[in-house]
Image (cartoon, rainbow, N blue to C red; front, side):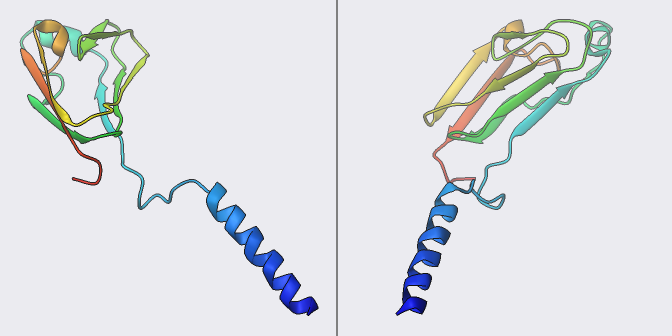
Length: 124
């Protein structure tokens, strides 16, 4: 009887620990990370491409887009400013296609518009 009680307590403890654990790395959606390198603004002004930037990004609902500004100049991404040394974090809560146009859509990569396609969760 004592052995059965000990097993019940052990199972309860394991269940409690499992529910408190973060999702495994295998199930976590990796961030989409973009880094704006030092000197990007100067390179862009001279006509060079500082970051190879596609005109369409594809993510899934809840996936984070991280844009790190390692340049000395202010940059824009998805119409939001990113100061030198800062990181913009953007997630989308619903599926859909989101379009951003003009210089503030993305100030690197020499693109004039940026589209973000957000797919339903679980679709890669």
